Length: 330
Image (cartoon, rainbow, N blue to C red; front, side, top):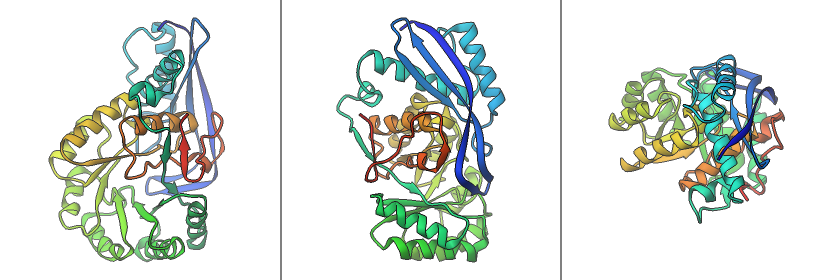
């Protein structure tokens, strides 16, 4: 594969409504789009989408790293130092290789992998009723799994939200939660005892830090997932070894791309644990790359958290939206 042109462009992502997590509120953010063109005119796309609380770099760092990679090495040298820039390069190279081979990325990586992917929806809203309505709309649209954020409204506020959502979606839809490390260990254990009655699929990051997660998991009535506390393959290995979680959340855009995420998934599975592939609330280029990775490695249950393009009012590409709760990979 010979790259004839590499374009680097900063683009704006804007959400329909602000999204609040324990790391802060996001209304819009910048990302960097990487476009690779080979000598025959085939195009591969990648997205660098830094996000505070999840990645160590900024959009300025990622953009600078991609511009150096594009100008100095034209795709022939070492990958950029920036983790989200590496993700963009890895995704773009895979996309380009698949287009050259006249196939899809997931089939390039794993022939016979599925073309359809049932995905979890993220319910959002500024009030209890708004979040419950968002969750109900996701179920009506065909989603069998819904996720909501907790940890930003106090325990009673979280309970109100979880109770309202469970009431609206019924007992058969899976419900997962994400606290983004909002609590301390004693607080998390108190909350988990009360949240368990709502049949929670798993809770992501009730506390921050691998040791704290291990302390919570040892006494938790709800399965625990590690996410931003293990941002690298090495951190994930340590989380697995210390028993910090029941499963591992993999964000290809945050770990360095689909190839690095696949390496992490192999480590987790070798330990007898499961992975769930999710987005970084990035644009549809990054979401599509994550979806193809999930299909290729068979990370289909728990449902990947990849129905997030619908949250965007301004995207970087044609929105990659689910149809009847599924992403169609083609």
